[in-house]
Length: 306
Image (cartoon, rainbow, N blue to C red; front, top):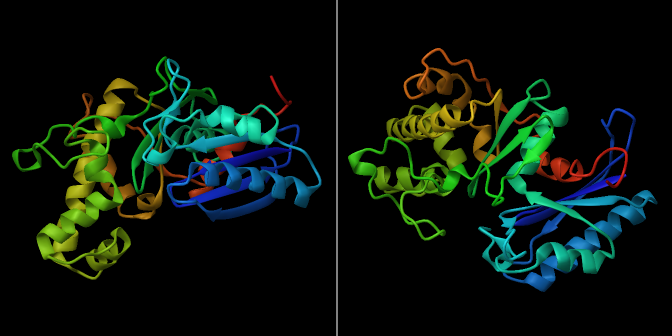
């Protein structure tokens, strides 16, 4: 049995997958709890309790994989770049191993999403997969031959903290980002970014879902915001295609549920990519908001610990 934990800013989710010869394991257990806000010790306790609950309910012991925002720094062995800032500067992997009494495997949550979709999701036939999280933040992960590529500095795929490509005069210098820079892709393509754009135009506060609903109902300002969002997303993904040229791009996170993205993006991409005849498929995560937690479970090989 393989246990996956998705350590999110608002929720912590656990899943247990059965081992099979093909690796396509059935879901044996799934449960989520609220993330203890700003409480590092509380987060450790919550993860340990979820692992214990999974094993008690299934009667099996499992390997444990953790998906978390940010990554363990190879130079300090501490977590860095997490938008759940209480985790930054902490030896999260070692503290969890001490609490659980076993080895764990830990990866960035976007890497986990990409791995899940490459193994048994929307990109199973793709050799190189770029996975995207569009939600509270904007994350990215790279998987090659069903193996996570996290890079020498463990920041591979962090497209959200590059500047918005081909920025226009009214987009500069851009909003401030928690990372300390201005105009990061994340500040434009996160849910908060879309909400901000609508508020500036209308004076009203609406969620991304409400904006999409308003656009479908004919609200011209909502349509303007969605058109701009799609163009910014196309610009940002075009820069990834120009560098990585993946076989598939998988969108996850709450904003991936905006169905208008999928027909709109392919023609927009051709306006920005180096080659105009690109055919990169842009697909929605098959496992939805379970992709990250499933990918965390997939961090361990099917045959056991290696």
